Image 1 (tube, rainbow, N blue to C red):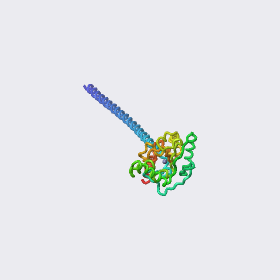
Image 2: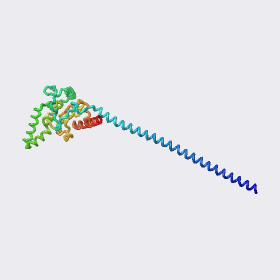
Image 3: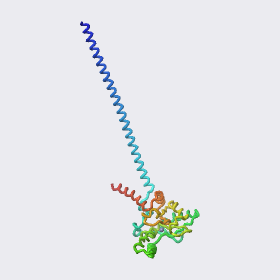
Length: 280
Ligand SMILES: [Zn+2]
């Protein structure tokens, strides 16, 4: 009996040890599984943070590139609305009081601001080399001359039956109101073809105008009153009136299809930004 009891006790102890061992194995396996899972999660989170960092760096780089591009665009122009070439004269911007201009003769009978003589001469010479016959038909005008031309135009409309105010308004689309015309600055010239000297829209069909419209920017001149900008310039289409603005400005205006008013507004945006940066 005692032997049987002894065997029974041993069996129980053996069974318990087995159970304990099994529990230990399960525990060890569970801990090992948890540890491996934890390690993997840590690794994954590290990789994610690296990616986020990379993404953050990439985004920063892209933003920096965009900013650099914008700055570059600004630097490329390198112009200020206070530059003499960019003097804005129109119905809303009269010639500054006391404005003086140093004139120089060109093509014998004309005068322009002496600073634009060389590029103007070069442009005419290059056009002639192409077998064309450009002819300056109007250049610097005194205020008195502008007044005379304007009065003549007003009278012309009055003869056609317009009232005084109406005649003045219509006239102003063709001949600038004295003090608001670019010819008084000496920075503008009217150029026609020697073969067709009438100032109407057919002028743009001449070989001279075609060449000037395509090439004048290379010499710093801009076609000042384009047909699609009448609402902004407040002057009718004049495919003969060229205004000196400088090579860089004329090139940019042509590339971006901007008239002078639009270009000045564009530059002002940059200048206002710079001003804000200075005072902040
Ligand atoms: Zn003109």
